[in-house]
Length: 99
Image (cartoon, rainbow, N blue to C red; front, side, top):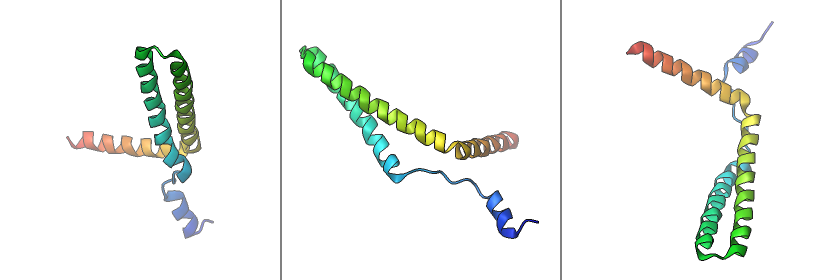
C-alpha cells in the first residue's frame, strides 16, 4: 500500500539535474569559441597563417567542449526533457482546441 508521501513524489515534475559550474561555463565557452573563430577570419585577411592555425584550433576546441557539455547535460536530463515536451504538447493541444 502506498503512503500519501509516495503518491506526492510520483505526481511531481522531475527536476533538472544541472551542475551550476556546467551551466555557468557553457555560454562563455561557446562565445569564446565564436570570438576566436572571428579573429581567425580576421587573420586570414591579414594573411598571418600562424595565428590562423592557432586560433582555428583554439576555437574548435572551445566549441567542441561547449557542445560536448551541452550533450552531457541533455543525456543527464532525458526524463526532464521528455516531461517538458509532453507538457508543452498538452498546452499546445489545449490552445488548438480552444480556438
